[in-house]
Image 1 (tube, rainbow over the protein chains, first blue to last red):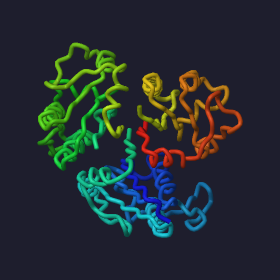
Image 2: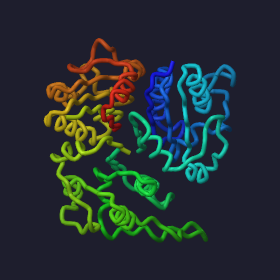
Image 3: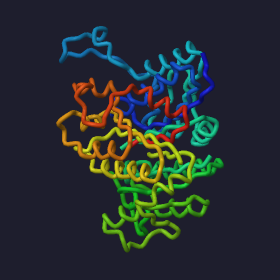
Image 4: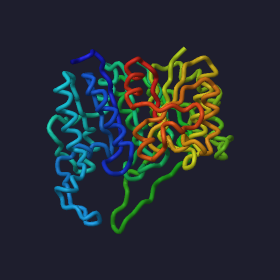
Length: 137
Length: 126
Length: 108
């Protein structure tokens, strides 16, 4: 059930490098579950978060095979957020900064992710009720 | 909507990117009509200093032809109507109290930050 | 006056910039703004009862609500019933609440 609020999030961290990535997705998850319209501008390393070719693996240290390990793949998190947005009656618009994608060679992303530019961040933020930016260190 | 961009992190991947990516983002958004200003704090106050030179990087036969030129980027933002502030105490802490700065950068005291922030609809801290 | 939510993800043991941000929060509150701080990730480490956390107590004394992400607390085995004075556990949904209400939300 949509509630009329629109929020924009911008973040920068690549997958597997910082707790910030998980925290930002937790925030997006909370907003999406409320049926909000949520915009995401992924900048720099964050464009790899929905990269389609992330691959799971086993964990020999823990003695778990690939299935048992069930290693998180952030692209699956993004896909799950997309599904939740639909289920909750809201929307998740995920924009990858295009030049950041080119530099990093991560052009293939999960469905629902689109390529954009800084102009998209400004447009999304201007049309939102509020925006949260999470920089990197 | 008026936004204050706070830049704190300095020289993070600036050689690889040939830019500070937040100053670059600011310029790109300004070009798209954004109304924003920049506050340099912590190590990023060094961006306001004239005379930075990042040229000369080479690996084997590869040489960098377009090193970052942050003072020029700061000046260009000012030329495009983006106010650039630098926290005075952060400059002084780093021995930059009397340093030659890029023309147009405005020093602001920490005690004045609440009033500065009050003039913006949103604060984006990168 | 405005309402500010500072999200503090860093801890004072590793980053001395945390002190500067707490000072800014106190200064904003001193100018009549409503200010709250949400601790997340390692930002909750000083919230453990017994940790050296003078800065957190000073925030509370300045009338600033200090909340700590319950997930981050549990991840670090910090009991929610044994937090530094002035800190209360909260869900991350508080951040979304405040964003939706139009607070100026600033990540550190």
